[in-house]
Amino acid sequence: MDGKTILGLPSARLDYGLLLATSSMFDPKHVIDLDKDGQLTVSRRSGDAPVCLTRSRSISTTMAA
Amino acid sequence: MPGVLAPRFLPAAQNASIREQAIESIGTYEWQDWTKPGSPLVNTNGHYWSRLADLAWRRDIEIHLDSVPVDLDQDGTVDTHVTRHISLKGGIFANPEVFGLAADPDQPAGTRGYTSASTGFSGLRDALDLETGKPTGDIGMNLLAVPQWPQSSGRQDHSWPAQRAA
Image (cartoon, rainbow over all chains, first blue to last red; front, side, top):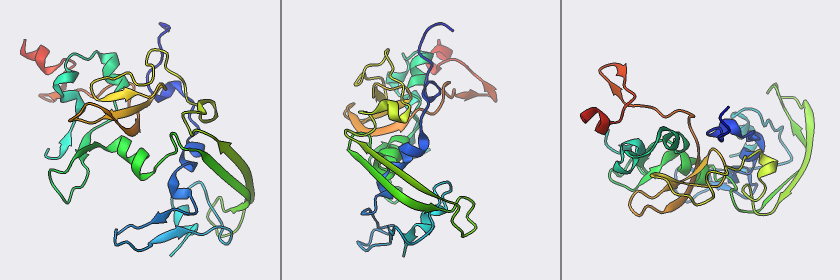
């Protein structure tokens, strides 16, 4: 080791889960308008559906059309 | 390729060291709107995390989960419940230890390179506006510890175009 900072993310121990959890996508008030027509496409609904935080498909299980 | 610009080919990058290239390895700039060729170029990495995913780099964070059911294996049944409360004023950058961010003493926040500015933390860079040279707030994650080099005749060539021409 030369004492220099190791470059990039390898020198960090990022908590990706917590980092991603701060995304506005997971804000219950966040509105997703996929086709940009000004109409709600999906919004998060909490409390009534099983939530899976580990896979991308979980997004659909936590959101209601 | 139209609509795609690799920062390492910018004139300002020609004098960058390998180390600087690695630190600033945040990927390409591309047209923000591909349905409108010629639309402003944005760094896709930074734009994604900061505009689309919209991570809370600097805004307050309030995450409160109370016995939220979790289906870990997606079999339709609840496997466990999660309870966690996180309240972080100032967002990610104000609470680096919580997220595992490492401060970079060699790169104080705001230190500008040829395509990005330092956030003060290793691996996270603020993409510069290609026209104004100012930080955009599009903060992306460093891609590689070693920059990608241009290919030449099928053989990896570890020199800059200017060096090869000399």
